[in-house]
Every structure is written in structure tokens, then in C-alpha cells.
Image (cartoon, rainbow, N blue to C red; front, top):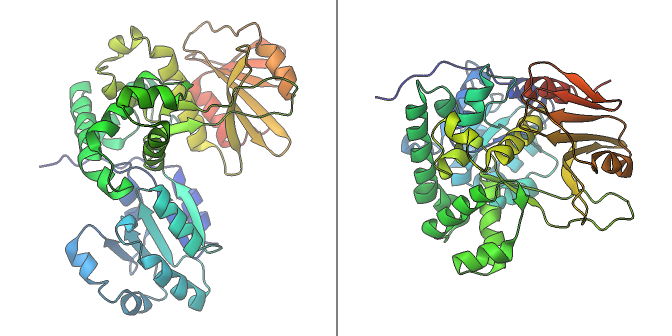
Length: 388
């Protein structure tokens, strides 16, 4: 019998409610087992409808989807695992266009690029997207545990590290053996599993699709296609380079990250925090942890990237909204120092204030325009849009 976990309040609830109040259809997207169904059940009220499209009894209700869904008019209808029935999108468009009211449908999906494209095109102007990420530092208390185990609820909330590790091993195996078939069509699980592990060993490094392809015996275009599937399933993130309007030769390749550090560590066979401390990926693991944590709480409308010149001067994360730019450098040290070219990069980008994310208990100034922050403090600033 599976263990019943307590509910951990999620920051996304307020954003989902806001989107439901203004949009006919809200799509809550995220990886499997991240808590989408649990969250949706807390959002829907008495008299609303919840359909799990992995349950045959629920699927049978949609034998004539237009007839069934028309009969639910005035209720919020939640369709879980909607990627199993992409044929429903045209039906939803017809119904929402007739009713012309917000908050008609909440659809949940473990997204793929094809699903996002079809849903967005069919429901253009009617659909609001909300991503549910794993737990963030603003949702749970133990940052060391969150860093090691990652933010998937059953991993983070496990009774001990061994139970968490077992869950993540099962998750990775299930993803490769079952979920890939839904997300990417005819993709060889063994080859994608090798690529996934190679991504873990390349954490925080520039993408070299040709090198990865040569190791796998496939073309660089095939590698990019497989990475697109992994990215669409929220398993990896390709952080684009920031092409600022400066007269310097800039790196053009994206940086590659396994998004959840718990999954990163299981792919690298890291089973304890002591093992992480002594592993070569330690600094890049912290970097990915910071980036995912900040992006999970950042308000909509911000664009993210990294900045690196051909001479190696760089910023790990550059956040842009309109004319504002925020720089975040990641240092897995309680006594962080920035590189010699750091301030020159701030000048290039026109940044007046920068942050260094480090495992420190309290913020402190590094210099006149650079502040060192612990991750929870940084996430609090990010959740407020770095308001002055």
C-alpha cells in the first residue's frame, strides 16, 4: 500500500485562481508526479467535475465528448492527463466560444512539444498556461534536503534518503519505459536514457550536440530532437545565451541542465549529501538548483538567459523584463568570490545591482553593487519581481 503524504501548500494556487478568473481554459503543466492532480482536487469545488483520462471509467464518459461537456455547462471541468486525448481541444474551443465565460476548463498535462503546439493553436486567445514546478525553497523548509532529493513531493517527503533514492530510481525507469512513448513517439528508451545520463554529466555546460551525437552514434539533429522531448517533459532545460547589444563576441550555444537536482543526483549515482560534496558536479548542481528555484517563483513576463563572452567572462543567469536586467551568479561556497571579469560584464549589460546566490545564512554586500544572498532570500526577492 502506498504511503499517504500530507499536503504541502503550493505557491501556484493563487496564479491558477487568477488565470481561471480571466481565461476560459487554464492548462496546468508539469512533469508526472509533481503534484498537479493533488493541487487540482483542492481547486475544484462541490459540483465541479474531475476526469482522470487514465481511468477507463472516466474516459467512457467522453464517448460523445461534446454532449457530455455541454451538459457540464456552468461547472469547472478538470481534465487530467489531457495529452492522452488531444482530440478534445477542438471540442473545448467550440464550447468556450459559445459560453464566452472564464473558468470553464482546467486541463492538466505532462507536456510534450506537440501537445503544447496543438493546444495553443486550437485554443489561441482562450488558453492560459501555468507551469507547476517541483517544490521551491519558498514551499519547504529544509534546503539541504531539497537540494539533494529534489522537489518531487514523494522524493522530498520520503522518510529517509534511501526511500527517496528508490522513488527517484523508479521514476526514471518509468519515464523511460512508459512516458517516452506518449511524449515522443518512436524514440528508443535505452538511447534516450544514455543521453539523459550524459546530460547529467554535462550539467551547467554548453550544449555540444555533435559530441553527444558521436558518443551515441546518431546525428546532432537527432540529439536536438531527443533533447526537445526531454525539455518538453520538464526533464532538462536549455538556458539560451543572452545576446545583449554589446560589441563583443558572445557564446551562441545554450547551457544544458537536468532540471530537478534529485533526478540529476540519481542519474549520477549520488546517494547522500556527503557524496554530493565530494563530487565534481557539486558546483554545477548548486547552479542548476539556484536557476530552477528562481525561475519557479519569478512572476510571468521575465525572460531568462546566461551571458558569456568568447574570452570566458560570464553571468550564470540574466533576467530581463522590459528595460530591467538582473544578474545572478551562483557560488556553492559560504565565502563566495566573483571572477575578475564579473564587474566588466555588469558594465556590458548595464546592470546596477547583482546578486550572488550562495549557501549563506544572511545577506551581506560583496561590493557597492553586488549582494550575496542565501537561496531562500533570493527566491523571496524573485517572487516579488526584484521590486526596489
